[in-house]
Every structure is written in structure tokens, then in C-alpha cells.
Image (cartoon, rainbow, N blue to C red):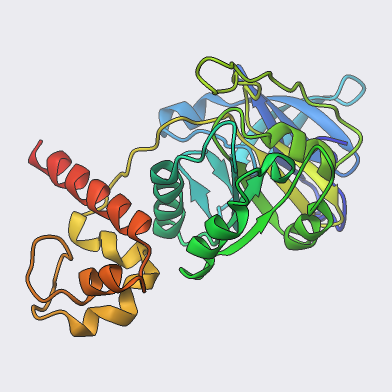
Length: 306
């Protein structure tokens, strides 16, 4: 059940502690044992410019046991925090794109991977809609990202293909799930757990983009000690607090060829005798990935000017 905490539950004497499983309009739903409490956050958090996030472990004061009402009194230390999606205490990310309808936006995919890399969160790349892969592109798309060291898989939420493999990758983890509208994210989540039927949106045939069907982040238990943090669909991601000179650090496939660059600190842009650019020409580095790198590098350069 969404919001249900499966597996071992921490116990502390004399204090109620739990995990935020959902937050809507200033209300936070905290799972403590087998109960869900509707809570407000104390004003001290606003004063300290701190905001509870889905996934946070918290201390709470129970106001009404029968009605399941409480106040969050303290936020416990976070093991990790993502800015977008705004969630806490996840240990991996699953980014979902469709093979077709809509066509994958690889620039957006790379942005997400860079953002997760900045925060030290490993990512799994999932391509959905294998059942309509008329051009047999799944193998090509997976090959691009597997060559960069990412775990990838292709699934069909409609036919159930690949879902068991996906469940295996998510077992024992708290996973942030993200992807643009229309890729079948909600349908995949429906396959991962059967107690909740999420609203699914229809694709606009004109623009091949889906309606936003997820309106809030929510922690969903899918097995013992296994959770997914479903997050609202996104259409753009900014790269924050990243110097353009560090961007190449988040393109791991470049590392093997940087020793062949003529200049130390090569940006792999306009320099002569660049090992990375040579690898692109030779097919050893994906041209698609390299072109995305160039676009992001130039974008970061423009941001720095302002």
C-alpha cells in the first residue's frame, strides 16, 4: 500500500519517529509502524529555512491517536537530498524514457544523469514501450548508456516484459523515479505494486507529450525494505552549482581518452589534438552523448557570465 512502511521499523524509547511518505499543501503524511499520521510542520522549520521532504525521517508529537494527527517536531539527519526531484534519503535513481511516442530527449536524459552524478546518486536508465519498438532501437539506446557505465534495461509496461528484472534492481533500495510526461512512468509503477492504481494520462497525438499525471512526490513501498519515490513529471532540468570545467567529470566515457589530449585541462571543445574528439570520430565515444556535452558546456558558460 502506498505510504505503508514494510520491513524492519526503527524503535526509539519515549519518542515517536517515522518517515514522510507524502506531502501535499503543507500537510505531511508520516508512516510510523503500521500507522499513517497526518502532520503539520512546526514553525521553527520556516524560521530556520528548512523544509521537510518526502523520504525524511522525523520525530513527531501525536496530537490525536484515534484520528492519526500529529506535529513534526524534528528532522533527522539526511543521508542524501535531491533538489529536483525534491526528495531525501534515496540511494539510487531510476530515469524512465520511452523508446517511441514520444521519442526520447537524450539531452534531458543526460541532464538528469549529470544532476544525479553531482549528488553521488547512481542511476538506472529504463526505456519503456518495447512493445511499439518498430525500429528496433532499444538495443541501440541501451548500448549508448551501457558503454558509459550505466545500468540499463528495456521494458514494456503494457505487456509486462522486463518488469521482473526491474523489480530485482529496485529490491532493497529507496529509489527516486523520474521521467518526462508520456513515457509510461505511472504505468510502470502500477506494475511494480498492485494495491494502488495511479491515474494514467493519454498522449496528445499533436505534440506527443503526456499530461502531467503525478502532482506530488510520494513514497511507495513495493516490498520489504524496498521503496520508490514517485515524483512529478519534468520537462526541463537546470544544472545548478556546476562549473563548466567540471562537466566532463560526469561523462565517464571520456576518461579513457583524456590522456591523449594535447593540452592539460582540455575542455574537449575547440582544442586541437583532443583525445575525446578523436574518439568521437572513431566511434569509440557516442556522438550523441558528445553533442549533448557540447550543448551543456555552452549553456554553463552562458550561465557563468550572468
